[in-house]
Image (cartoon, rainbow, N blue to C red; front, side, top):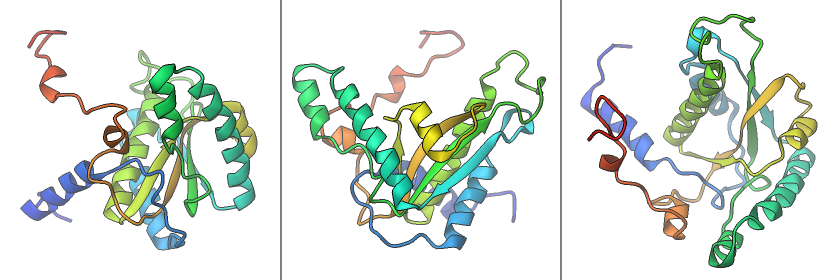
Length: 217
């Protein structure tokens, strides 16, 4: 593998980034081949991690009974979340499909073991949350690899952490980072679903970039 990217390889990377979507409703029931799943997990495992701590684990969920238990908690949490919005915002929220837990052939929980590298970790001495951020990098790697494999991914964050840990037998000291739905899809939307439905629009990059100091254009 050469160090330099060809133009087509560079374009493929940007294609994966710009066409990645948070998939909720287009999952097909086709099983995900084991070799494809392993490639995706290997991509996640090659994410950057502060101090090379590699604090992640991956729980692959295919048991319908486990999915059903997690979906039941989602339903409860989703009702609680809907109550936090008012008026038209609540009405719009209630019309959004926010998960594919039972539809996706594979669910995947990414976790963080905050004790894996011991009490003192290179690079985490002054920013203790760097292990959590490292796991998020693994999620992003996995998501882009999945898109390149023509698989959709949906991140379900409307869950009670303790209920998720109980359903998956996650030890108390382990932190769940992401619960993902994964599988073949009928199509990828041209723009994010929440943008299409009018929930949020993508912000202008120029409004988000400062030079040298905060709020200095």
